[in-house]
Every structure is written in structure tokens, then in C-alpha cells.
Image 1: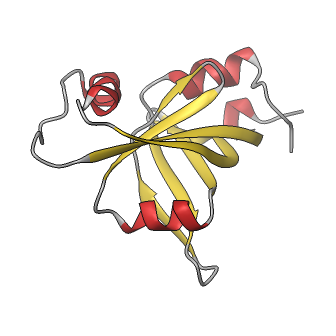
Image 2: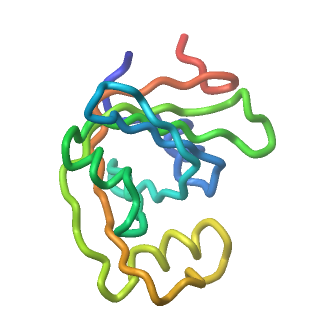
Length: 135
């Protein structure tokens, strides 16, 4: 698999508000995938989750993740990144989740009474498929 940085076409697609799933690893080794919103900025991925999510426990135990973003117009065209969470930060003012929600929906995040945590992911490898398939 190629190493970062993503080539321009893949980076442009990955930076759009796409459908996405993120996979973390449970302590027993079982992978767990869930839908997620994300931002791709400066070669890193930002995700944000409710502080009560089990996924946070998994990421604290094992920071390895995979995130796949699918083009909403052509789901076979996708970019998958594999990496690790390098920073977990409380999102006390909901700044990060609002940025992500505005990117994905055009509106701030509607739930204002739950604690949130941001996770920054460094990309180790990536691959593209569909119109982004590596030659």
C-alpha cells in the first residue's frame, strides 16, 4: 500500500464530505466498524465522538484505525486510510464537532448537552479504488 501523502486527486476526493466508516480494534482483537463523519486537514484525519462511546475505550487500548470514505455519487470510488490515533482531546466547546458537522451537513452539531472527544489520526498507508485505483 502506498504511503502518504495522498496524490492530489485522492486528497481532493477524501477532503469532500463523503460517506465513511471507521474501524477500531477491540481488546479481544475483533474489529468494529461504524459510520462516521470526519475532516481531512493537513494530511491528518479528525474524527469526533461522544465521550460515552465504547470506541473511545478501544482507541485508548489500541490506537490503530482504518477509515474508508466512499464517493456518494459512485461508492465503488473510495479512499481507505490506515493509521493510528496520535492525540485524543476533550472537545469542551464543541468546536471540532461543529466544524465536522458543518462540513458534512452545513449546520452545527445539534446535540449540545453531551461531552465530546476529538481524535487526530496520522495516516500510515492508504489505497484508492474505482476511479482512484492506483496503477
